[in-house]
Image 1: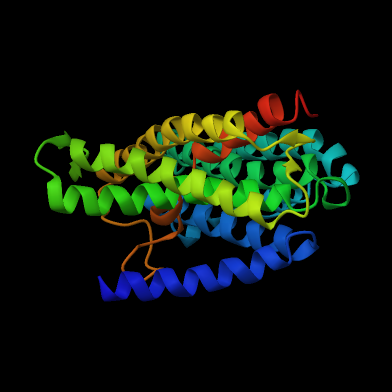
Image 2: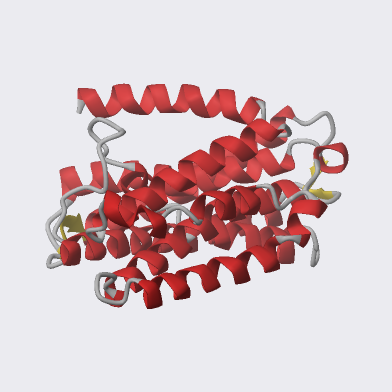
Length: 289
């Protein structure tokens, strides 16, 4: 427990520094590095080694381009890069058809695509909500994603520890309980509403989210999204655990003492980030593009 708390405290400090540089290229590069580390964890999880590093290598330029895609010039090259990326991997399968397991490659690419989608959504928030027009709204929604995910995780952990009796998915994640899941939902909702209240209090005027007044309706939406997000966070956690069971590993990595790897820490974020980004585009800002 002590190790987990210390790791979390250090992580929050690093997060604060990164968010202070949100509107600079530093954020793009940091997200690129974190995303590539997660993809490499998936690469290793499916049993690939240094001899097959050529299967991981194309992710480096592709992920960097994706994380730069809030820039119009980078965005215009995504389609070409995606086509070149897929074509390259197909050639690798032909070239190394005796040694490349297409099943393992497919699993690696599937998990990696979920990871890239997750981090891309953070960049998409930056693109949709430029600071010169929307001030700190993009940063708020990134924090809201993390509040939903990690707040739900923490609440689920303590609720399950003190009240857990009924297993949620014993063959996939034996430690998860129904009581913990309920606590996680409550934690996501409470922390999401609290984050919105604090953000509202820091504004010079009582309006944000595209000029909408922050009132009961906004808080209600935040709470409802928190319920859905918490469920998706649990699904993300179970999905990552199911993959670990199939490939026979305990953790995806050891970069975070007491927590595991990038994928172990961000598994609950994987499906929440797309949900919040969609809600931002279709609810808070009326079909923002």
